[in-house]
Image 1 (cartoon, protein in one colour):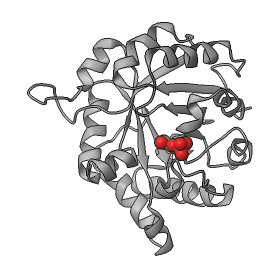
Image 2 (cartoon, rainbow, N blue to C red; image 1 turned 180 degrees about the horizontal axis):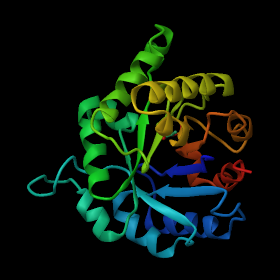
Image 3 (cartoon, rainbow, N blue to C red; image 1 turned 60 degrees about the horizontal axis):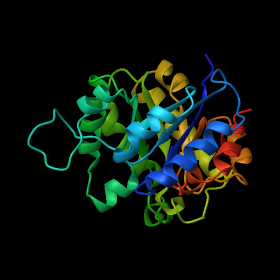
Image 4 (tube, rainbow, N blue to C red; image 1 turned 120 degrees about the vertical axis):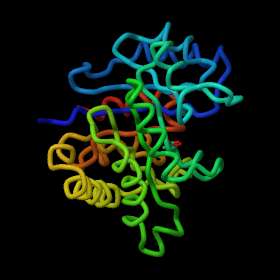
Length: 249
Ligand code: PEP
């Protein structure tokens, strides 16, 4: 079974309602391959989710950038998985490196979040990735395997999980992993899934790359056999996001 190419746009903490409307109209006018070829999901800040959902073309979908680790309640400032489901938001990004590093989200906490979000019917883009220091010390695979293990220990059905390999040193830095570097880690991650989950999960789970993906570098990265798409930050706010979606072809 082929893995459908997946392109996610992480808008992070950016935008006014006017800017968001402009991005949506650029996306709505873009000529891209059909939904049979590529799955496109954009992730605006929470406050713009409804606006984007109601105005975005029907072949593109919406993700939240986070959700709470369990049922909602007395957790000031948090947004629960139940609320996202109630709003009709199908996807959520969890474990982004900015949350892991700035908000101290541990592997276990991220694993718990992924399991809870899935249990409520959300689909999850789960992020893993090593820092520059970890890469330079040769521990890239140990780090991403530990991050993936914390998810695998809590999740048995991977159908609704997309795994995003996002080397921290490449996020927002303009320093993209080479296609060979991305392929190497994606291949190892798929092998890890084969051994630690099942051959079926390894063969069907999309492993997407994130870290300074642009219109200029996406084609070469997309050509690698284990790169099943992208999670795009900065460039997802720009018209070149359409070119990145087109790299699915
Ligand atoms: C991200 O934040 O997920 C990301 C990959 O950012 P950028 O594309 O800007 O490096």
